[in-house]
Length: 139
Image 1 (tube, rainbow, N blue to C red):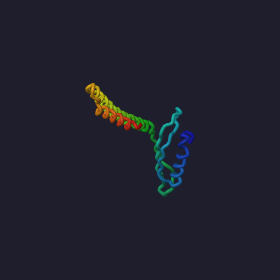
Image 2: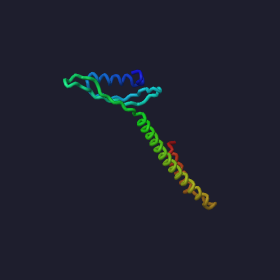
Image 3: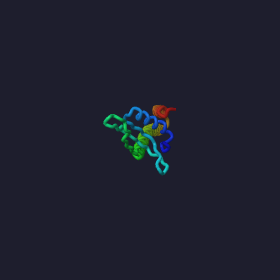
Image 4: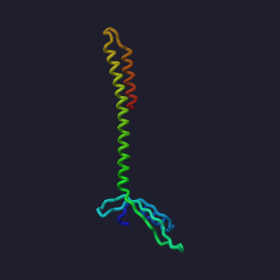
């Protein structure tokens, strides 16, 4: 068991012991160190083998290297998270852009008002848009 990753060793030995004691099918996933010193994700499954008389002979087992599959799943998950973050950021930018466009539109209307009159409604709208922007930013 010196090739099994130290964090997986106790769990792997316990699973093997339980199966061996009960003489039942065993399936365990762990990390195993290869000749190059790198750890690979392995899944090992074994079925018990018995003589015709019922005497337990041991296991017939197969082990499969899951490392590349696990890595591909992790990369796909990370890509999906980044895509979701991009969609969220795009939505926030769109909403903020709408607020800025409203602010600019009302300020342009206020600029075009007759010099003698105060454009109260436009200033009120600018204030409302600013308050909505502040609320949506969490401030």
